[in-house]
Length: 138
Image: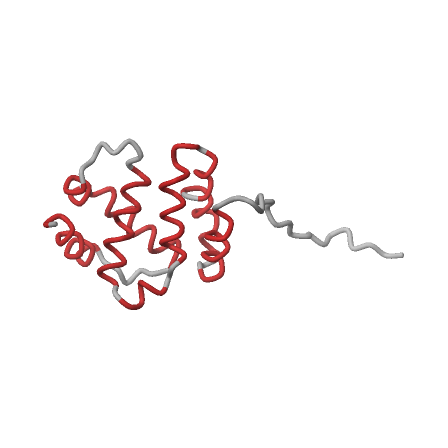
């Protein structure tokens, strides 16, 4: 009897099946680039353990899992993602939407979000600025 002792068996991380996040994360992982899995887990998925982040994170992940909106109308999808991202990073609601649109760090996080979830580097800072100016006017 020969055992292959050098074979490494990959174990999937255990996720509670009744977790609300599971369907959204599974949907995202079907299309998201595998090389950014560590970043997605570190910057987003791990926050599901903190109670005050659960609701905004769930809405952000659901929005991210609906990838079809990006192909159809980039402007609307960027604006919606920005609102969800603002809700996630500003849990205590200290920033108004107008202040959030002017916040440089949120714009950078939006670009990084597009990169690690969609592997999309075509979205530029100037496009984001133009799309978000329309939010600030409303």
